[in-house]
Image (cartoon, rainbow, N blue to C red; front, side, top):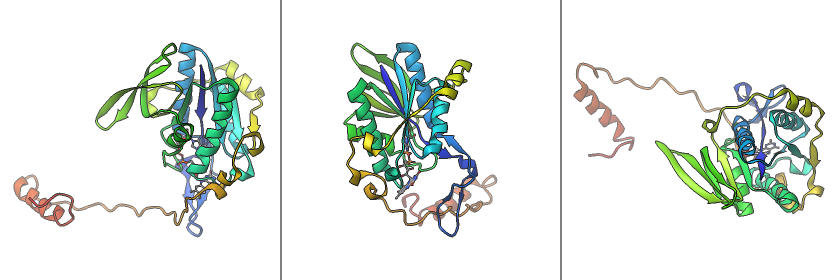
Length: 272
Ligand SMILES: Cc1cc2nc3c(=O)[nH]c(=O)nc-3n(C[C@H](O)[C@H](O)[C@H](O)COP(=O)(O)OP(=O)(O)OC[C@H]3O[C@@H](n4cnc5c(N)ncnc54)[C@H](O)[C@@H]3O)c2cc1C
């Protein structure tokens, strides 16, 4: 079994600031972390490897500083790590990002086979949750999103059964392999890196692939291949304290009537 985990290095959002002049993220001096959902995707792959055997490869598209995230993944127990880095990839939107990741997974599929691709539910900086489904669509893979538990992987029948997190509960779903999963944090508890793996990580040389090592159409890369236009980025205004309707405890019926009179004109509830 070959599990490929897509991992993104993101700015630590507790410290993200927006430049009010340019409306762009201030990245200088902001510590970078592994996207939290992606560590759970890695843990899910490692648990599958522990149970069913196989190999875990982690891939990330980003600048050379993302090597740090890949080394951490090796420290957790990943077998291989690949950095996708090229000036031509810069400025990629989700369409161009999923294109490069899909092309890389296709290359791995041709060379050694890929059984399962695992992504986080979303990245905590871009927050679109589009890249996982984008990879699946490009590779024509079945996708199971918001996975909160892997119930079973049947290597003979080549199927995977999972629970997906849905509103007010969970849904049991099964699909054929190869497939792509996006995972939520509830899927597992993270392990500690072992000393052996940390030593291996310190010595590990990540493979670095640029556009020439992938079979890519250059017009689909980076800013050139990104139809998304960011017109404005802004911090939403802080919410006010809202309005308190007095008298709820003494006269709830009257308070509800006042509330309904306020909500109907706002079209929050229909006029009965
Ligand atoms: C016009 C434009 C220009 C941009 N320029 C840049 C830029 O120069 N630099 C930049 O960092 N961002 C840039 N972005 C942001 C970029 O589009 C997103 O960061 C990226 O496409 C991923 O989208 P997301 O963060 O919403 O990820 P999501 O779709 O929320 O991520 C879901 C999952 O996909 C996987 N994933 C996402 N991104 C990666 C990745 N890079 N490598 C491996 N796995 C991944 C992870 O498993 C993640 O949990 C730009 C966006 C636009 C619209």
